Image (cartoon, rainbow, N blue to C red; front, side, top):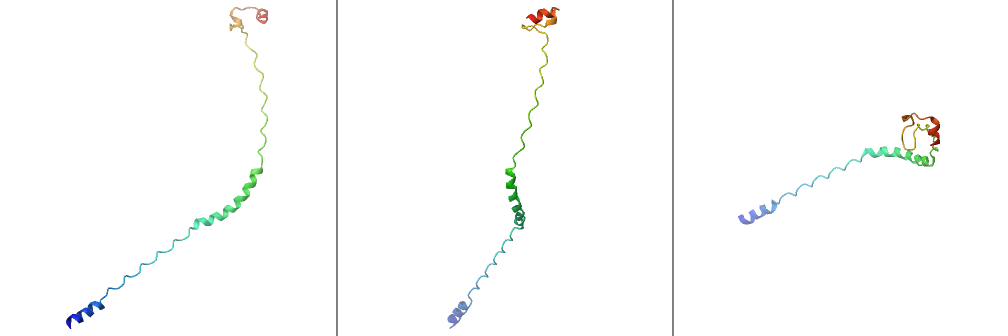
Length: 91
């Protein structure tokens, strides 16, 4: 009898089931996306592509070149030999 009684106690002493784990809290939605609603106004910027740039202004005319110094074709300066101007003009 003692064995049967002890067996009953053993049967009654089943371990308690483990408590279920708590469910994880849901993540909060990101509030930062609310600001994206304002981006809808940017759609109007697409129309700005139609604005042609203004034409570039015409370049100013180049200034006339200064007169050459009195050098002969061989590169010698006119004033070197103090020759008269008419000889230099002929050359």
